[in-house]
Image (cartoon, rainbow, N blue to C red; front, side, top):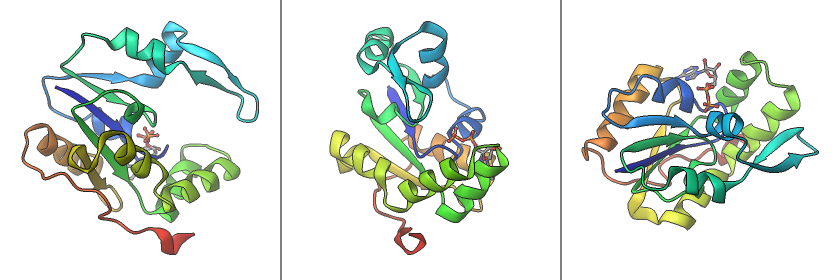
Amino acid sequence: MRVAVTGTPGVGKTTATGRVDATLDVVNLNDLVRDEGLTSGTDADRGSLIADLDAVADRLAGRDDVLVESHLAHHLDADRVIVLRCRPDALESRLLERGESAEKAAENAEAEAIDVILSEAVDRHGLDSVYEIDTTDRSPESVAESIEAVLLGEREASAGTVDFTGYL
Ligand code: ADP
């Protein structure tokens, strides 16, 4: 099974997937892109590398028992897509604590409030494959348990279960 764990930067993807007890290999897409040079250029505004998603897909071809985590993971083929969510004000605090700029923290909080990644995930994969998990006020271990429940087929697909538009 191919599982994508996605969500706005700062929702806790790397932290939670690092605690998931599963037989799947966990692949951090950002590390893969950086380590193997799977880029198609540089984003001049953000000063960050642009991932070459076709090259990433080729690199992962044939790897089925894998959990891919990244804010770009939902752009790849997957059997199940887990979208981690976080209330925008809490997300902004997490990003500031991680050392991100105030501008980047605010930009990501706004993207979270308007469901950017959830919408992209549903557009590409359909409602039946998307599992939304709210991480606000939950420990990384508890979030990891919810991810494990999706892997085990113990959770129903869900999207649109949170409404953060009040934080715009
Ligand atoms: P992502 O991989 O989604 O960008 P990270 O895993 O890097 O997010 O987490 C972002 C920041 O939030 C880190 O500083 C991390 O320690 C913190 N964090 C992660 N999960 C939680 C959580 N469940 N509750 C509170 N803080 C968290």
